[in-house]
Length: 353
Image (spheres, rainbow, N blue to C red):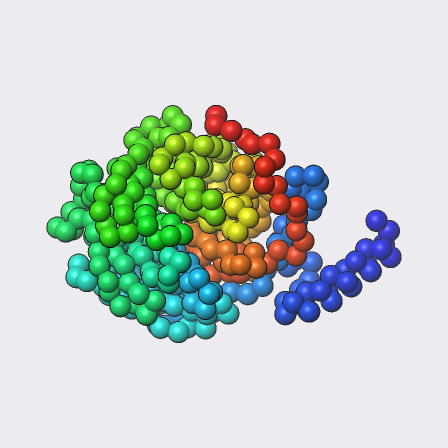
């Protein structure tokens, strides 16, 4: 591309971004340029951020998971060490909060994961109390299930440090990442146990500290675990469909992998802190298609725009914007795609390895 053509392209890009209500920043705002399938480039640009360390409204003691309601009016955010849920709009304006430390209804001990179902109910993995709590959209307690005595357990239907909860589209089934039992447990939405799968190990279908689960638009369960540094996909009955990833710092590799999200095209976004012994020390977000093919990545270590210290959880809105929580910087950063790639559904699959 000639210099003149490049200048014309950048001018057009600025017009498009402004028309979308996005700010056109300097070149450093284009956090990462990578190439997906068919060699088509994709960029993510930093848009905005909010949050800081503290206990005031809009501050966090240790930020964790986040999820939108179906209409994307509310973004529910887990303040883990604040033992509360804070609610914001998409621009980061604080709306309301609930929760405090304790073992009672609506109280938390190290709340970890949040999932908002298709009816707007809010489900919280209350890790330290070894239970799941359900609330309405306004934070009113509805019911809970798990360990009534608050102690960890390996019994079916009970938990040892549940880190994530995911509810299917029909609000019929609830899936829980039962982390220290190294399994996924499936329940009816009234809390009745259905089945469990997984065990400690590194073979396909096994886990070594499962930390994250999501449900894609096909109803499949996406799970990863920190010890094995791979992502696995299961059907709703626990049949393994796909596994990808390994330890390392290359594209498609992870080091002490954290949490995930999926978008409406079933693309998979993974927070990769790169803090392990084989990590690069440069935390990043990696994006894959539904078959585990690497698409793009962005991020580096620091406190500046587009940088992370400990990227923890993330959420993707209907426009493809990615919201990343950082537990050390105690903020949420928002990134927008400024070019797209063709949807790669039904392309060659990575398969189970």
